[in-house]
Image (cartoon, one colour):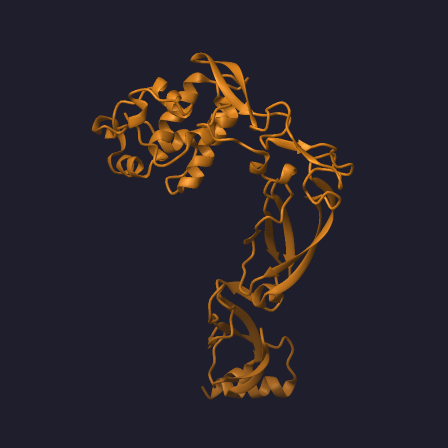
Length: 367
């Protein structure tokens, strides 16, 4: 029975390559044998799954052949654990050079676990700020026609004293003494393969190769501080309840000049007493009298755009719907609108005068 690689990486079969890579990175960190939560068997299993799903061509074969994938040469050359580790370290070996990792840089993925990365420096500028998620409540018509909102967030922002360069204004940026400006230092680390020498990011300069001679007194050399900030939001016309908006780099600023996180806004749309939305169509009810329904009439109907006059033909029945084209909700990010449906309700009087009763009795006799 073949292994379910999607289940191993805890992703859906519809997941894109970026989602697969993120899932692999997360699990690799969790189960790395050198960690307290480590599990070598699980770690190898995760790696095996990623070698297939992380490669577009191999993933297509796996999706096509499923449990028979291994028998059809799924790994394309019998890659074993040692080969994988050599490749991840950026090392050679007569066999590892023949493996196709689908253009993925294993050094990038494992650099922060093992401390190696194919010889490429890893700097603080690769830091990412944390994302922020908030809920925003808007009215029904604001969702229909779009609106501008302002939200106030208390978050990390670039330091306004050193402007993010980490140094006290007027002081120098100097070469890091620990790494000699290389951004990386060598160390010996015990791994499941034994003792290996690796190059790791310099802890003093964070991989920059340089550092502030006098750290900023406001942010203490991190380049960020916390403050309240007002952010303008543009809510598009036609947005639905529980939809999300993503504002790139409007989340928390990253330390040491890294990239800010994103702001995710969850939209909560209040219900409306007059209208009910179904997709881009809107439904509303209109009460008319028994006589108006029987004889026909012109009646005022409230729409999203204001009141209009609706012609109700004679003999209209309860529950009849009248369609007003283009009076519904605008299509999100495209031209056109849905329709408005007016549902007729008959207002039956609870009390009748004697004359009304007599007239209705005569009407009933003449049917």
